[in-house]
Image 1 (cartoon, rainbow, N blue to C red):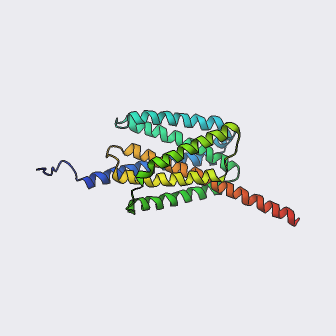
Image 2 (cartoon, helix red, strand yellow; image 1 turned 60 degrees about the vertical axis):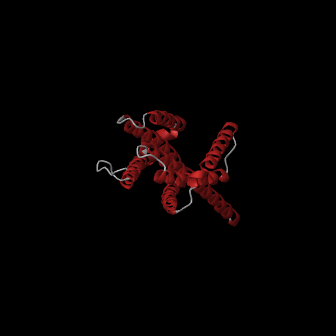
Length: 239
């Protein structure tokens, strides 16, 4: 018969330690992201450089982040290489978000960025609580969500190549897809990830939240632009 060994903590303690590592890393990632994005928006010389070299700044951060992610997938269990790759990945990804925020800030959407960040935090918290409390296993729908995500990516690439504008429906669909991913990835963390997969789990949640933020930001900015255009038209009619 199996006997309890005092050298091995109970599964509940292992799970608690794993979850604490995941959300601890996630908190550090977002602290760095907020710091970098704030610097990109509020530090005038850096913001002006981004505005003058937006494509270079964006792709110059996205590509290193992607390369770091590839390396991280291969050395996720190798310390300290995994922590170093995670740090570089987060810094590069944070700068790409900073570039986007700087562009929106320069266009007069500073308040919209704060609203999007607040809404993202609220939605993520609510979905995380739902994922932990519900008895429904949403992980069985991961294949469906992946198909929708691939469709969104293809749609976005098609629009960028042929000069079409993605409308509000694209942003709403993206928001729904990543809301689903928050639920699924949270349930994966709670029930299915191994205790040594804390770095991969943190990255998955981090990317879910970043994409959710970008889609919400797009929705709010489009709504703000529409309301501003409508108010200007009413002002012209009254004059």
